[in-house]
Amino acid sequence: MNKVIFSPSRIFIIAKNTFLEAVRQKFFSFLVVIALGIILSSQVFRDFNFGAPELKFIADFGFGAIVLFGSVLAIVATAQLFFSEIENKTAITILAKPIFRSEFIFGKFLGVSLLLLVFTAMMTIILTVLLFWREGTIMRLHPDAFVEGRIVAYADVFLYGIVQWLKFSILCTITMVIASFSNTNLYSVILSFVILLICHLQYLARDAWTEIDFVPVQIAVFMLSAIFPNFQLFNIGDQIALGESIPFDMGARIVGYALIYILVFNLLAVFSFRNREI
Amino acid sequence: MISAIKIEHLTKDFPLGFGHLKLRAVDDLSLEIADNQVFGLLGPNGSGKSTTIKIILGLLAPTSGNCRIFSTPSGDVSSRRDVGFLPEAPYFYRYLTGFELVHFFGRICQVEKSKLKDRVEEVIEWVGLKEAAHRRVGTYSKGMLQRIGLAQALVHDPKLVILDEPTAGVDPVGSAEISALILKLKDQGKTIILCSHLLGQVEDICDRIAILNRGELILEGELKDLVSKKDLKSILVQNYRDDFNDELSGWLRAREARMVGVEQPQYSLDRVFLEHVGRSELARENLSERAEAAMEHKPASGKDSDKEKTP
Image (cartoon, rainbow over all chains, first blue to last red; front, side):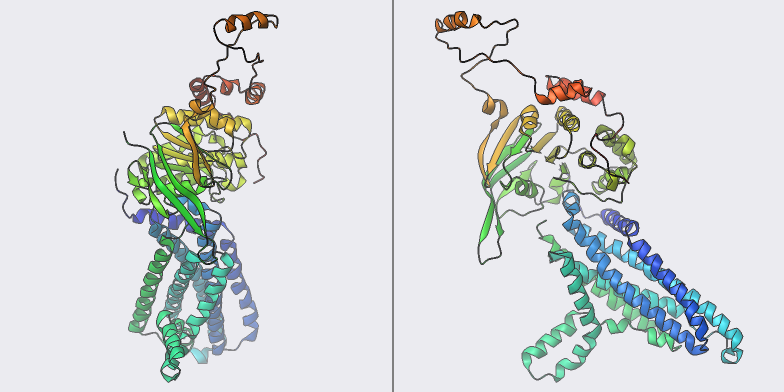
């Protein structure tokens, strides 16, 4: 009998199917509604007519929307697309085929990550168009404030989108690790949100653990700072909104940091799912 | 000759979550299923059939013992290359069409790209879903789901086909067609494991059976050996009259035989039903003929007779 070997093509088949499932379910309409919401809200901003600070307001608002809805989508979509396979027993039919569980995990990750990329790209493009249009309007109304041309660094807005996509992908792998051992979808979602909170506050633990006297708590806080990624590193929106450009090496370090966590959490999900009884 | 499946001293315990308490689902099961036969795996609910199937498919790890498929350990992914599986009450991706679903599983099984489209069309036609192939699976009736499940199990032309309740929710015509398809698969040299509570169907098509109860194998053997009354013979006579009884009894007594009773032979209700719904070819006594006939008379509409869901 020929040996079945690890196959990237099976990963792409699972990924494509996962993405197709997400798009044909309610996720796609969810994306469209969010995007439309952002576009429509620009009508409200137009009446404020703040001048240049209005652009910072729009950028902050847009970045906030990307982070909020992207995080929700990363957790809910992953839990739904991964856990429902187990809950609905479609995983039984797939895993009864000649396919490695690692291929299944990687395929699921790639599919959800592609969905998150589409979402982030869509939101970033809409935000960019909105900023560009509003900046043009304000330039005509207050030409003195734009003597050196446009002030929004649009390349950095796209960099922000890429960085957030990587953050969502880390969140997706964390959710997948949880879903690989949890028994209910709700548990996966709630625990993932708790971990999202920990990741956002991780920098506090990292700064505080050396100052804690009680050793067990010190160890626990150190573990928190060591295991969970620091999501504050991905928060480059303030710099962009203030008109500061993002240095290349900083962007590269963030990308590297994200890729390492994505790899590690993917491997953890494979390890956890490998012996799961379906 | 290599067995299709060889199970040796297989035991499976599930922890109950209270200390060290465990539920023994399969208890020291040893079973050998030869190649090219229809094997019925029977037993009441909770007897360990599904657990055994999941161990065969590598979805569960045994607590002890081992299982091999064509000599390859069942935990090895390679062992599933030649296995097709139809799960009980199959749930598939509702957003895919029947064609896309079978195509997806064909690609997972690495059916050659150049042959995949033809193969998908072929198995979809076999199961009688040709005209519904481009409808979303979410709109399929229960019977149609079983058929598309059968198509995905056969798309990579496996040597071993495991069918868990393939006729659950299927009407008698669909059930007879699936039986005929199983016999056709056997004719093609495949081994089929059938789990079913429809004992009439099992009796009709299985060569051997095994009965599990509370995880233990309680009976196994050739079906005809297990069900035949070996010390009795029946004679079918045309134009028999009741007044023959005394004379015939005497004749038999003189030869140290005894007439036990005179019965009126009956058609099975399945046969009566199939003849009256115009599918008499499925009701032929000769099973091979029935398989051939079923293949020649595929359902024209590709629909089930049970009510379909509204898209």
